Image 1 (cartoon, protein in one colour):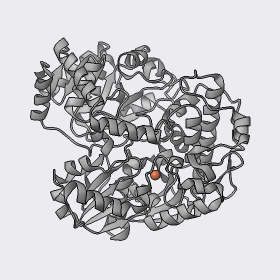
Image 2 (cartoon, protein in one colour; image 1 turned 180 degrees about the horizontal axis):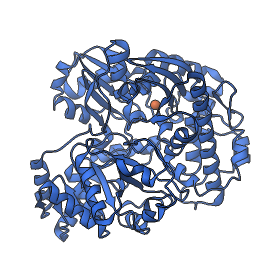
Image 3 (spheres, rainbow, N blue to C red; image 1 turned 45 degrees about the vertical axis):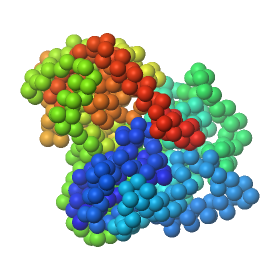
Amino acid sequence: MRILGLVGATHDSGLALLQDGQPEFILEEERFNREKRTKLFPKRSIRCALGYDAEGLADVDVITTPWDMVRLRWTFLRAVAGRLPWSLSLLLQQTRTPQSNDIVLLQHFLSRKFRRVFGITKLPPIVNVGHHDSHAATFFVSPFDEAVVLVMDGFGDDAATSVYIGRGNKLERLWHTSIFNSLGMVYTFVTKHLGFGGFSEEGKVMALAAYGDDTFTERFRDVVRPAPDGRYVVNMDYFSFDAFGELRPFTRKFLDAFGPPRLPGEPLTDRHRDLARALQVVTEEIVLHIARDLRERTGMRAICLTGGVALNCVANARVLAESGFEHVWVPPCASDTGAPFGSALWHHHQTLGKPRRFEMRHAFYGKGYRDSEIERALSQAGLAAERLETPELLRRAAHDLAAGKIVGWFQGRAEIGPRALGNRSLLADPRNVEMKDKINLRVKHREPFRPFAPAVLVERASEFFHLNQPDPFMTLAPRVRGDKAHLIPAAVHVDGTGRIQTVERDANPRYYGVIEEFAKITGVPVLLNTSFNRQEPIVQSPQEAISCYLRTGIDALALGNFYTTDRNAHASSRAADEAQRRMHSPERRRIMANARKAQILV
Ligand SMILES: [Fe+2]
């Protein structure tokens, strides 16, 4: 059984190709077309998974989509009719930028695009899977035979929060909230209010919250309230997104209580930090409230968290520490990047009743490159590189890291989801407190309040962090142990937590190996890990890695077994030219125009 999960016309377009329940590819189109959270038809992902002319489609039995068109149209009609005449504005595209109007005709959109791009007129049957059903279906690749599954995102085709019980190869939905009763949407709109890109930069607000005080926290508890039945209620006295969408999400009451929006370029003040804190604290309280109730009600010991809200690793860590659940699992693609994968899983297990045989132990289902392709990219860039045997590569990289160098680490197949997990990563020494500023200054140019993540050998994680389970996908932010924080100061956020990733040898031997070598030199089994990019989607190809290396202050570059510190002027100027050419290509201009229209920051 070969299933292609596919989505376009909404943010995070991409695909997953499933063979008998096991992923062969999970691909995000943004990695190919370089537009963050792109909505465009995922033609490059299709070429990667199915061949240049999508000829592999002939072997696909079913195409699944993570949106149920019937539910979506009903929900949309009800929303438009909800607060007449104002809610008529929801017909305007500008009121809901993450999705194009084509989403309500997704089936036709996909058929049309296959015809135009690949000349294919006969498609396998297309099956619509519910949006939250798709998120929930990642339970089928979790380590648990039975678990509660909590799905929270902005909104799906009929809900903003859903709770499922998963047992074996079946999921059953217990309850759900309406699309406007959405903690995720509240988070996104307050993120925009604070001057960041909504639908993409919520993580910045999560980081900023650690710097705030509780000036607004009590007041914010009136904005989203826990309900006695284990659910929650968004107080719509503060919001008008149910009538005006993104055009006017807040009422006067919200603005009076929390102040005006932060304008572009305006400095961050205590008010902004305090509002971020209020939002984060209340989000944590609501997620905990739901989780505690579910733990009590079901008696289950494990919970899967998914949907975009599950990217909130601070809230996730509190669920593990305080809800009563003994195990928490979050997939690496909890946001809509995993929705096509989930839709395929739902069809395979829930609809067809196939048994579970696969557990997701790593996230490396993206595109990989052969050595010959890496070699060609290096020679085209005019860079001299040594080809090292693996043990020597690990030793050399670890030695450079211990000497304070920033190493671009490009290995194997790209990881899926929004976080770099060791195959498209920048690595650095966590022992030096100034390393964060150094990476920011020389490579990332991120806001100084954002932390970098520690990657730690799984066997030694509990020695450094208050954590009693693995977290291979960087989904929890546990507290760093007091007696160890001084050893890894660059990896400790201001609130004393670390956005941990535990690394297992089996899941990624090379990544494990470089941390292990670093530990041999320094005694510290932890490396600083951040995504290999600079204000762009994570690099995917060797060319993009080389270009990023040459345009920034990365000290050394490991591309597969090739290692270079060469940085000749000729190569650097060619990389700059190439970046310039890409920036002004017709396709790039179209992408930028789309992004501006959608107000998504690229
Ligand atoms: Fe979603």
